[in-house]
Amino acid sequence: MQYSRYFAIARNHRRLLVIGLCAGLVAGIASGFGVPFFVQRVFKNIFEDVETTYSLGYLIFVSSLLPGVFLVRGIAGYINQYFLQWTVQNVLLEVRQKLFEKLQILPIAYFERRQSGDLMAKLVGDTLQVQHAILLVARDAFVQPFTFLAGLGYLVYLAFEQKQMGFLIAMVVVAPLMVAPVSYVGRKLRRRSRSLQNTLGELTDVMAENLRGVVEVRSFNLQERERTRFTEKLKDYNRFAMKMAKYYHMTQPFMELLAVCMVSIAFIYSYQKGIGFSSFAAMGAALFFTVDAIKRVIKMLNGLQKTSGSFSRIETVLAEEETVRDVEEPTDLLNPVGNLQFENVHFSYHDSAESPDLHIDQLEIPHGTICALVGPSGAGKSTFAKLIPRFYDPQSGHIRFDGTDIRTLRKQDLRSCIAFVPQAPVLFNGTVRDNIHLARPSATADEVVDAARQAHAEEFILSLPNGYDSVVGENAVRLSGGQRQRLALARAFLKNAPVLILDEATSALDAESEIKIQDALKKLAKNRTILIIAHRFATISLADTVLLFEKGKIRCRGDFDTVMKDDLFRRLYEIQLGDPAQQASR
Ligand SMILES: Nc1ncnc2c1ncn2[C@@H]1O[C@H](COP(=O)(O)OP(=O)(O)OP(=O)(O)O)[C@@H](O)[C@H]1O
Image 1 (cartoon, helix red, strand yellow):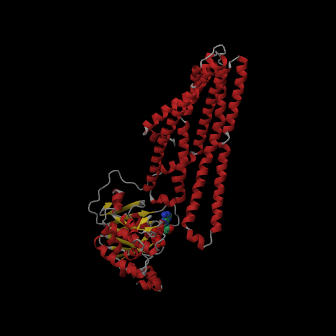
Image 2: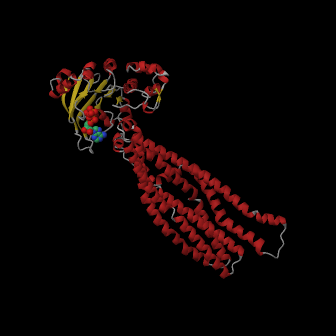
Image 3: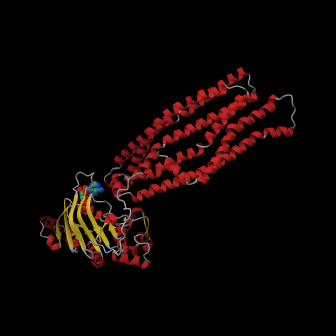
């Protein structure tokens, strides 16, 4: 059941829940039983007992009975609301945390299959919907059933007191009448709720994509296309929202009509049975609270149905299988040096029929060497590199780190031994220093500066208004592509991991900076393993080993001179020789 997770968390906040529940019980009894009971007493004394002359003191006492009941009801209701909201906030805090934690451990493939906008909508929009729904539950789930039972209890009491059992029969007949339309509306709401939240996800996707592609939108004059896409999604959203509204608001007038009909029946009944004014007024009050309680419970149930789509969208993320997981008893990685071995590795993206599977029979990349991965676009170089930190797991075969199968290592241990610089590195919102420091929080300020120097980033960092303390904006928009890459390299250098993987990490650098970084890499290679995916032959020529990829396989391997004998490599090389930009970097 999709709500069981919420109940389980709420149980951890038992104390708050019990206080809220007890207060709800008092508020319910005060409303359903207390109010009609005192209405009857007050009215009887004042309007029906005309023989007795009451003192002013007594009248004040009698008249204050009702405000007294409302005072108790108000205080208890307040305590009930406050403590239940406290519980709800705690439950939501945990659900949001769990959702975010799940997103931190889900495999990269999960994010590639989904739009980030939709995930954002789940994280923000759906949890907000769930918050509204649970608050509604907290408000009504306890007080209203108590109010209903207390009201019904009073009607039974009245029926016995007046020796009239007709009330009870009337209530028994009317109750099912209320439930039937409610369950019909509930079904309709549940079905539409998921569509509504999915549309919200799509709408957020369009917005997120538009913001990401702000340059493309302007340079290709896509504003009109974007406007149309956004408006279409907005209209879809509104359509579903209105479908929900159609059913959601249907129950209230129906319930009110039913309540008024019941009061009219009560009029006739009272007149015929000669029921006095005080009893009639008390019965009216009891009926009001019972019907109002049912109305509120129905509204709450419909509210829950309305957000059931959000509940299940959150549940799908929380229940998502963690496919790249740690083994039960992982092996410890002692004194890692970064020897890499591949044995009969086969990997496929499954869902991409066009992409060739990756097959690596036997391969060793020894510690202390630089290995360059080259080949035409789409040959599988990045895929190969991403298998090492277990961004994906191969379908078969073994990848060994210092002789141990990486699947038997703790992912966290393995990844702490690898510094991976992707093609388009992301800088987090914060200072330049923070962005480098996050790679190794224990590093000293001097080490941060050293890493920046190695990445030839210091010069531009010092030219920024606040040097290392300059804030780089979201996605580092205020830095050039080359500057961003240099910061990402500095971050990787600071990590000081035994394995360094650079996936086209220097592609945006000018020739001079690239040559300087090559020198740094040569020095770094002495005590680590470096994998470089590069198209520029100036970078490739650094390598001790070159792996030439073609259609998911290593077509040729060896030092630069060996692979130069391969036609494909020579062809790629000659094309670059004709490119003046590449000549400059050579
Ligand atoms: N996440 C993914 N899901 C499905 N297919 C993918 C995914 N990533 C890459 N591919 C496919 O796998 C193949 C190999 O891609 P990969 O990125 O490893 O190539 P590459 O040699 O690094 O290319 P490039 O030099 O252009 O970066 C390509 O056909 C690509 O379309």
